[in-house]
Length: 143
Length: 307
Image 1 (cartoon, each protein chain N blue to C red):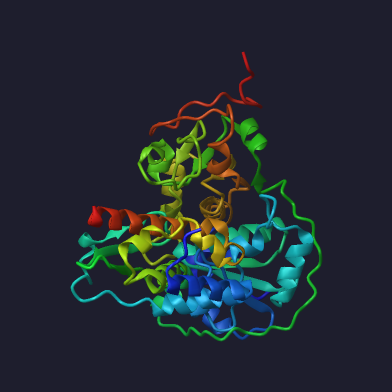
Image 2 (tube, rainbow over the protein chains, first blue to last red):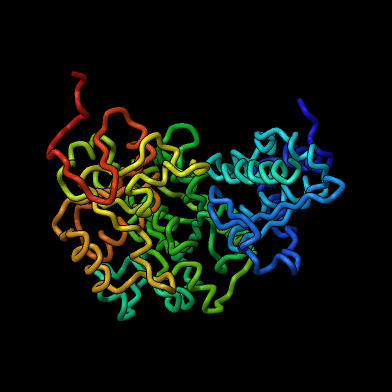
């Protein structure tokens, strides 16, 4: 099995070390820590793509720097803390990682977060969709 | 003891005004001991970011659904849940939530399966309360546990199963999903697995009335006259009809069930919670694609037999 990028691995361990209620609390904290869009992207959703599988509108932009590191930008309303929390996990875990490390993240890594019980499997579908879109963007930008 | 009903003139027009309260009424009654306010949202964390003071959270997915079988919780689990939230059998419950009370209506419908008699919606839901600048808090109240009796769920009156719908074909059905889901075209778009069904379209004869048409801009319900125009003028329903409403998993259609039953006074409305995720995956049930309702063979009690 491919190792996860270190900060994503750390998050997965944090989540799996606690019970369902505390996992929700962790997710809520990550939702609060999701950085606001930089000024150059704010208000320009044309450059971002919408992840339709999420319950609430989530916009995503992916950039790959010259040294092949991935920058992630997310925009989701404050009224959608769960979606923001999922975005926060991916931002904390993957922002600044090498493109190849992002592409190597197993598509089902989120199963290890143990959120199925606390959040319900139906709601987790948005997380899988976000990762898939990030990878597709990274592939396009590194092709 | 049930609380007095909200005598707001807008509500008085509805068939059962006692099923709604205004934000104004709720802010005046927040401290009543016989009232418990329940927040029920699509987003499982929204309550935790701030809620109406004193309100408790009930999550539709993790608390009202059975964790294993595709069904609602049984009487024992429901009693445990409500008792733990400080809700007694005689407590007045006011439910509110995000997205035009979509999930709040779903919770209310499940409470109704258990015959909880005094359960109401906050007209305008969370959005209106917030828009009016009313107080919100992150403090989670600790209500003393009470005894809620174990009541058997009654699925016979307001809930429809697949076989009921097959027997119902030819009578009025309301499909409350989006137009794209109704016609079936959404399933054919690349990369969008949102239906989880292998066939797209609608149940033969179903009228298309997307659920959110019942809501006004400020998330309150539209007036009775406006609702009658939509459901009777356009969709051709009438008050004595037997109606089945459905969507994808029964959540959006509980909102329409609420509108038809409590706001327009229809006496025979059932919510088909199996909805499209069951119908669209079932072998040999009849389906219509496109924008026309299509014809249903009346009284057809089961899918076509093998030749």
